[in-house]
Length: 211
Image 1 (tube, rainbow, N blue to C red):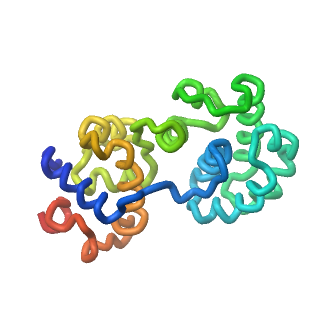
Image 2 (cartoon, helix red, strand yellow; image 1 turned 120 degrees about the vertical axis):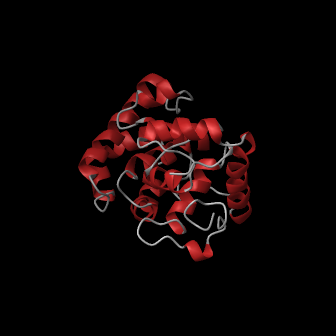
Image 3 (cartoon, rainbow, N blue to C red; image 1 turned 180 degrees about the horizontal axis):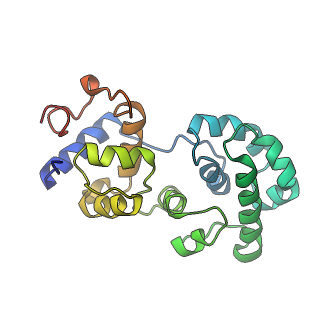
């Protein structure tokens, strides 16, 4: 596998940023709390599938206190179309309780605090730290785990190792948007089964697309 040099990595993000000048999460939410809920529900789900399940939910429930009032059974009724919904409903109720009892209903702004919430792992914490609190983190999902090696950005095979590779290589000017750029590129262009190399803005710099 050919790994890109610093100047090539800068070109990758320059081109992706030009193609997607305002990259952002496609999960729908009405506030920080509902974004956290959406991210927890998104494991092994498409964002579109999560959004279909949460639109009506978030119209009625937008705080951890309201979620606790809804209860686990009520939440299940809203999210039955979501993969693993019984487990996720249990996690959402549990994390809502912790938010109320330990954090006054607000999201903690540290990794330690976020990862203390039931159902919140490193990837989810990274999303919240980046999107809500403006910290330059790299949540590594299946798209980034596939795209980073394809683009020659990392030779690592685990989410944590890919995250550390990217944090050490991405130019600072793209640190806040890098994971959105790579995720959306992987979702719509550099897809798993049939990457659209013919319409890719990285032709000539990607190791698999004419370098």
